[in-house]
Amino acid sequence: MQWLDVRSDTVTQPTPAMREAMFHAVVGDDVYGDDPTVSELETLAAAMLGKEAALFVPTGNFGNQLSLLTHCQRGDEVILGDDCHIVWHETGGAAVIAGVQLRTVASDRGVMDPAEIARRIRVGSDIHWPKTGLICVENAHSSGRVVPLAVMAETAAIARRHGVPVHLDGARVFNAAVHLGCDVKDITRHADTVMCCLSKGLASPVGSILAGSAGFIARARRNRKLMGGGMRQAGVIAAPGIVALREMTGRLAEDHANARALAERLAAIDGISLNLDDVHINMVWFALAPSIKVDGLMAALAAAGIKANPPEDGLMRIVTHWQVNAADVARIADVIAAYVTGGQ
Image (cartoon, rainbow, N blue to C red):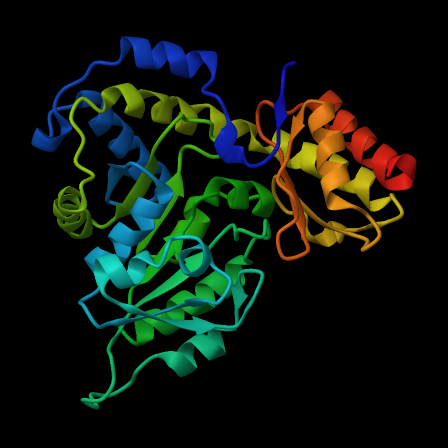
């Protein structure tokens, strides 16, 4: 059976062009700074993201935690959304690695009220207070929704007024740019640093980018080594990242269109609750009626050769990517509809 995997866009296989690039990659020892393929990737990424410099890192989680470590002093406070990836899905790394505390702001699927961010910034020098070391924003949010540029701009203005840097968890920032119909730099200019993943919708087999000023990246390079992220002949995994940035960023709209088509099919099924206004990128989130047996649905999907994750906190997620086409979307919708409307 050939499986159709929609658990995430992290499951993507490298494209034939990526495999070819890996085979022919010219390599060197990147810890010494002499891997030309890694250098090419970092230069390309910095230009595309509108930053002075960039650093190739193993994962998005690593990139975010490296940013916190490099921006902050131990004991600093980081302001961020209560539903963001750094809070929920990075294993409490902020406490272990950077030694910072997280001060959360109520978030509406990634959108934080700038006034609430401003209220949490520590103003003054009271010796009882931690220092506000960083503000983190996420776009696109892990809910699949995209934060408006106006909110990004207002947050950045508040941060700069108080001299606090902003880090953008942009794991899917290129998806966000497609949804907004803008250049990715129109998003990243509202942050001092940005992390973006090469290994999600862009389909590279491994790796992420951390970008920022030249001085910041020089410090981050040292901290990457401290964290165990110094890699040797890394050109073989950087090469598909170059393909990802040059080729795969231009086709993300296809994934968004497939997600929209799936969402429209699912929204028409009795027993499924889905808000089409929430489908911004390549993710479809929906709720099942209490009468629907989750184990049965998951078994029906598996029997049809479809890998999907069960609901979490009452919501189920299906993610499209370059290996999911329109026929696959129809197949997923047909299996779910058949089960929900009578196959239980």
